[in-house]
Length: 136
Image (cartoon, rainbow, N blue to C red; front, side):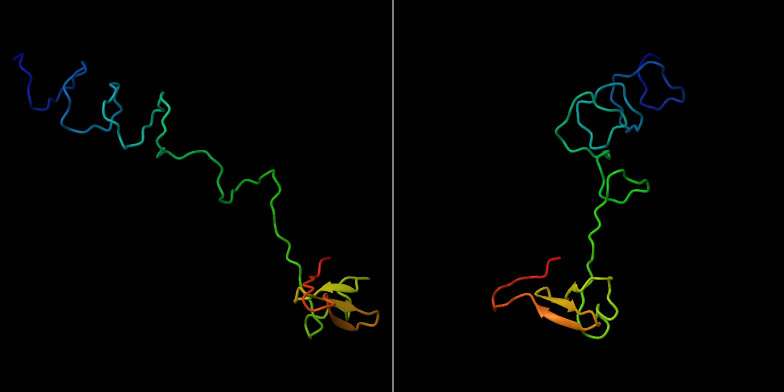
């Protein structure tokens, strides 16, 4: 019979059909589509698009990498603070040899040590409202 059949064939045809299929196919088509797809394509497009891509990009990541970077990394330094109270006294013995001034935990003060291990909490401000702070 020369009339087309609506029943599926067990023998695939080598000739492409111009009639649309009622069943969706996940095989890539050689025919261009008139309606855009929301599915990502495995084949790159020859036309640039202003639409956002659903495909992953190769832009830099903020996540840690398993491979080392050649660029130096910024690690903020944490300066310890001191006071003349038990457990935070830098003067007896000196925290750092030949260093007699240290940052206090109150930024408007500093710690001054004497040669005999004496510790003195000192104010940065001479007058109220000076608002001076310790700066090494």
